[in-house]
Image 1 (cartoon, rainbow, N blue to C red):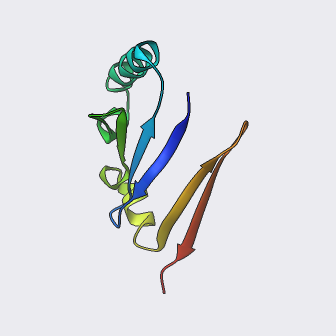
Image 2: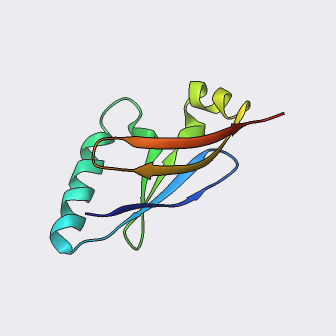
Amino acid sequence: MDLTVDEIDQAGNIFLSYNGGAGIDYMVKMALNQAKNHQGGDMIELLSDNRIMLQLSKNAQAGSLFNHITLKDIFFDEQFAIVEFEPKL
């Protein structure tokens, strides 16, 4: 499965898209349904067309972080998620 960061808005919401067939789509939907039952699950929203929104602005700590930084991009490699940001002046 390929995961792509499509957009990061000013509120700190991250829009992701993924590709794959019906099997991948089913697994993603099941995983997100399970996540909804755990802390922070309300921050994840499944959108249409194989897209996911992470609403980091719903988390008080993340929300206060975005008062001080601007999230620019997120990259994924085999082991890590790499976050690129810049401080707000």
